[in-house]
Image (tube, rainbow, N blue to C red; front, side):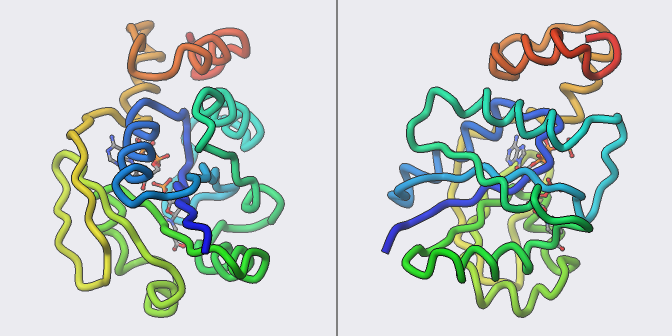
Length: 190
Ligand SMILES: Nc1ncnc2c1ncn2[C@@H]1O[C@H](COP(=O)(O)OP(=O)(O)OP(=O)(O)O)[C@@H](O)[C@H]1O
Ligand SMILES: O=C(O)c1ccc[n+]([C@@H]2O[C@H](COP(=O)([O-])O)[C@@H](O)[C@H]2O)c1
């Protein structure tokens, strides 16, 4: 069975925290690949800045380009409506019956798991993998495999705030993503 990591996210924008957590889990769990999966409409947050799904997808593609184990999974972008993970996992498992999927989430999402759509069913369909994130607790009633990574205190919120204030984001996001943001004039005054 092919061991496939899924890093679902809003990626508004992608940052080094995403890349580090994906690589740490990939090596720790000996995964054959990690698919970065941007959602179309996030189930639990607003995309405050007007950044299209297409921009988010392009930024993810640029971010993962240099790692041959990282792929883009565009499955949620082809679907309209809220991107519930249960729907995605069902489709992915049907499509790839010979793959075992590992859904990688940070500490904030581990805490939020009880509120996920049809969570009782979802935890039976996919193996969740949780990684530590500053200020969040990894305690959960669900079966989540924990992988400890170096704490990376970077969030997309921090990047958006910095760009908005003309502050430095070098080494916090991939250089190619920073160039894309500047070329496209995203996040206000990038
Ligand atoms: N620095 C980090 N450490 C651990 N997990 C992270 C980190 N950044 C993001 N994640 C996890 O990656 C997944 C996708 O995150 P997302 O794209 O929403 O980024 P974010 O930084 O959480 O965004 P925002 O600040 O806009 O809420 C989520 O499961 C989230 O918990
Ligand atoms: O299906 C749900 O109810 C659900 C609720 C919260 C988050 N998720 C998924 O978890 C991943 C991380 O979410 P986010 O909002 O931090 O980008 C992303 O793939 C979301 O679609 C899914």
